[in-house]
Length: 191
Image (tube, rainbow, N blue to C red; front, side, top):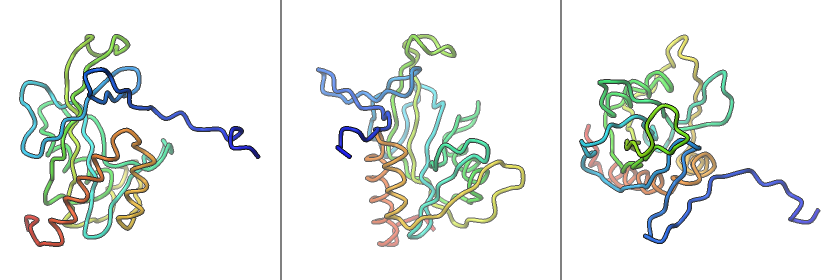
């Protein structure tokens, strides 16, 4: 079979604009730019959605909703009103994976802007989507009725899963996982 006959999945492709920034399109509703930041999130925009790679030792954990079935993903979801991104990660990691989070490492954030297709927010509304590595002190059973199941992968397979699921932002997760592995190997993670 010639290579041209193989059906290719529709993957969002970053668009490089004249100003040299890589724009990441998040569906029809949001466009964004990744900002690397390890210290703190800006306070002038709300964090509405978050992502966290949950890790413990040499393993990474992925989750999938029971009814969804569209593939393995990191802990992700909408950040509740009045909830900090770190509180969201602790809550969502427990609900989706059964993990108790002892430390979070901020990798950076997607600086998002609502498009004219966004029915929930005005056009040009700005928000954040922070990316974290969440270090689990323990991983127990997923709470009953949570509606999720999980899988544990060795770090190399975990990174492959991230490449497949997040083609436009996986490189930021990889950099953060590299940072985690160095801190973990040198004993510099908070105990």
